[in-house]
Length: 210
Image (cartoon, rainbow, N blue to C red; front, top):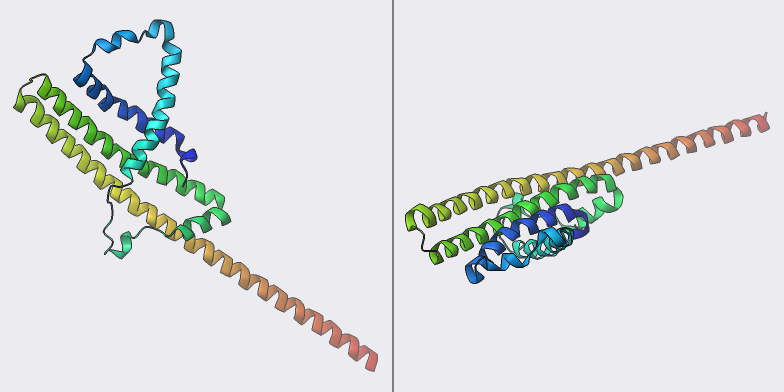
């Protein structure tokens, strides 16, 4: 699965990252720096630049999120599919691979969402502490909501990944069984042709003998 097929997902991941980057910058530098950005004069250029950087940022966050543990290696049903299976599906049935690729990209979006929620919550807590906001009414609520969203995202991601593994196995088995059926069909066809050929030769020999 390559990043070129998941451009929209990477841009979404990058745009999510702008939230925690914003709170990180205003925590360190304040909000005075916003005055340097004049959308009235350079709005289009700024928007294009932000979208382009969102894509690059999305790739970095996606890579960072790849270190999050998902499955227990002692559970056989959660073992990731071999690269050979995915490569085989890609080589034999490209339309099936495209469907699996779209599903895998959504799973990566869910995985990166966990990292972004964690960073957003962390920067909001730091910002609240610096602004000397009320502990119970702000920080505790932020921590609780962030933890809840991270847990939900992780559970949904895990369920989606299991579904992906199941689809990979089913697709691989279907392709292999189809190949075996075609192989059996071809062998039966050639066997039938040989029988026909032998019958013709036998009939021709009888005609000569008579």
